[in-house]
Image 1 (cartoon, rainbow, N blue to C red):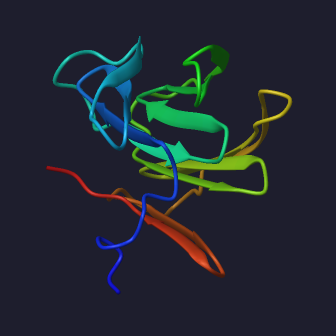
Image 2 (image 1 turned 30 degrees about the vertical axis):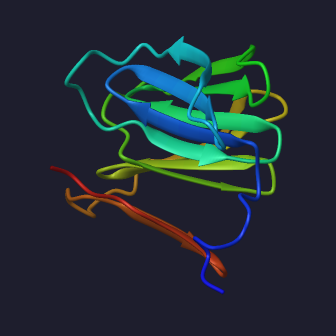
Length: 140
């Protein structure tokens, strides 16, 4: 059996584009909620992580999270540098990267734990990884 033949593992399907995060009912496509990010229309790509109960979205210089079932905002963390391109969430820590900078955010406390400007690494589209989980950056 392929993944498309089995039941959906969640009743929710999440999409993020433009400046919106939208959750629909996976079985019907009916919209359940939408939230607007601070991202400008046509800005950088929204980066998305979905857990069993939370949606985390990276929108430019802000990391936001919402309750999956209701869309209720949980937190917004300003990162202080526009253009973050990559998001990886592992064990309630969000790792975000911009060209030449890497930051760690505690999702429970909503605070930046550390930031490393990675001097002398140059610029480019970042990727982040830990054993078993990788997030690849891309740019149009």
